[in-house]
Amino acid sequence: MIEKTLPSDSLKNRRQALRDRRRSRAAGAVGRFLAVGALAAGLAWVMVSPYWTLRSERQVEVEGENLLGERAIRDSLGLSYPLSLWEIPTDRLQEKLQTNPAIKSARIERQLFPPGMRVEIRERQPVARANSRNGQGYLDAEGTFIAKRYYDRPIDPALLVGPEAIGYQEQYRDSWRKLYPFLANLPVKVTVIDWRDPGNLVLKTDLGKVYFGRHDDRLAEKLTALVQARQLSSTIPLDRLLYLDLSDPNAPTVQVKPKPAPDKEKTAPVPR
Image 1 (tube, one colour):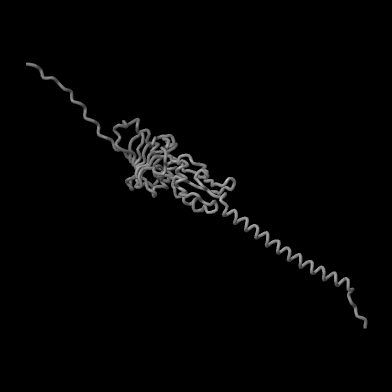
Image 2 (cartoon, rainbow, N blue to C red):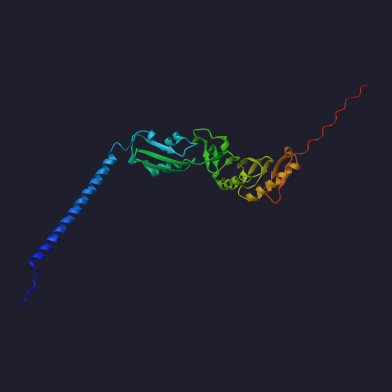
């Protein structure tokens, strides 16, 4: 029987190729380890480098502020300097800014070159004066109450196009959202909305005082009845109108002052 054997050169070549692959794998593993180590060392250097430090509020860029002012925004952040750029809790600071009712949204980003922080905000736009149990303030179109103390500068009266709200509370927010868009185009001018009586929403208009009853009941119908009530001015002098009651828009009533008694003609005594 004849044994079949591989040529010795072929066997040596296979062993050599196997050794080369093992060396290549080992070299690759060492290279990857060194690369990861270098990257980690680079990141560690970046983290501790004094270059990536906020040293003053001048490195905090504020965008989108108009009514609040940069000072109010920076004070709201409550940062202490110096502060490592990597230690800034951006998510927490965004949430903190958004607890200010004058701010609708906020976004904070770290800035690498040059090192700093960028704060971008969207303000709520006040449209009417208001007072509530929390004091004097303003309302935006969505019914958010913003206390006056949140502003460090006066609000331009030209922005306050809506009627003043008296006795406003959070529970009236849905009613305000429905009322405000209507009032902007209503032919009857409404200057005050009085919420102080929960059972009777009172409007001060150029027709006089108007009772709406419950604030959340049939608002659209009552506003339609208010528009139709403009014709009252042709039949009743407005100075005699005590109030217009639209709590039932299908049966509105009017309360007027009594007519003044006519002056009696004064006669002089006849001399004798």
